[in-house]
Image (cartoon, rainbow, N blue to C red; front, side, top):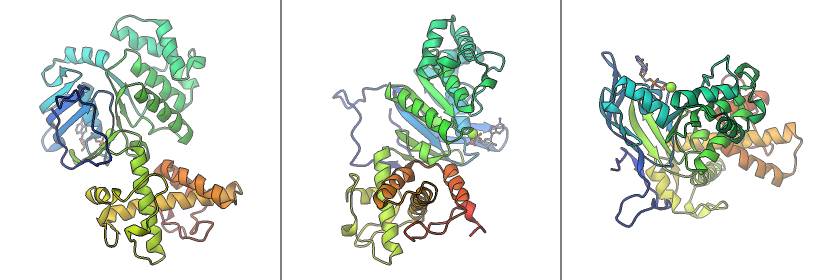
Length: 385
Ligand code: ADP
Ligand code: MG
């Protein structure tokens, strides 16, 4: 069955999922969660009435503030923790009805785990770490383990210990280990939480590749830029699903672009009328009602007005864009306007909050972009300018 999230955002722009003509989706769900509740002792409710269906091959990002229940949900889906009540079915296995021994079997056969802290065995080489996971599943197969290390770009470090690898390399080995027994579902808890920007990019590229090859992935992240790479984002708040959005990276990009234009019009004291918007990357006026539905806009005509959430997001995009321009102009002496603009346009969508703050600090919290427009302040700018 398909469980509707509390606030579903179905846009006319989205293609219907594949159907077999009977109105049933072709891809069987890999996860079905109904009325899931998890309490820790008296009074701590980590999850409350969570309903979720994940199709085979889908990539889901679980987002939300610290303590909202993300890790608890992931651990329950992976059989590391048990629900207090509700139904949890993963790849056909009903986890609410399983003994401890059964759960151990389930973990070895059905899921692969990737953790923020990698959790590789320190005295085993990269290759041996993979073979250990094979051993717990069935039998070891060195050739297969090497093939997988090759796939994650780590074959040349097969004989190295985790301590001899960079953080990003360790995480790629950990991902290979998670995949060694061909799990139906890959579970990743803040997989880039301990990585710098370059390593983050290589790990995300690997996840994108796995997803393209059909791997079902559920990933916890607090980073909106990373979250946008998934097919769907589930936002938890106090253990409940507060929001579920199903927009593609391109659609999110179009929202950003419209918000930016509204911001710049308002900045020059113009009314943001729909007819003033320009759509260069494939957006169109049909996006406005969708943006209203998901809480980014308060009104869409005759004048477009943003909600607080919309303004915050616009300020963040503008901030990333103008900081990127500043960086290219000051650090790389790039002064060609077209080049500046196109580079900034790319960067505004891919800079994570952490990297943005680092750039801002590195540039000493600049107040204006190279064209003299104000750069909205971030948390790092407090008391700095
Ligand atoms: P997140 O991953 O979103 O930061 P968690 O799932 O770790 O959140 O935690 C959700 C809530 O459950 C928090 O209030 C946390 O303190 C509580 N919690 C998590 N694990 C335990 C535990 N083993 N015992 C008691 N409380 C826990
Ligand atoms: Mg957590």
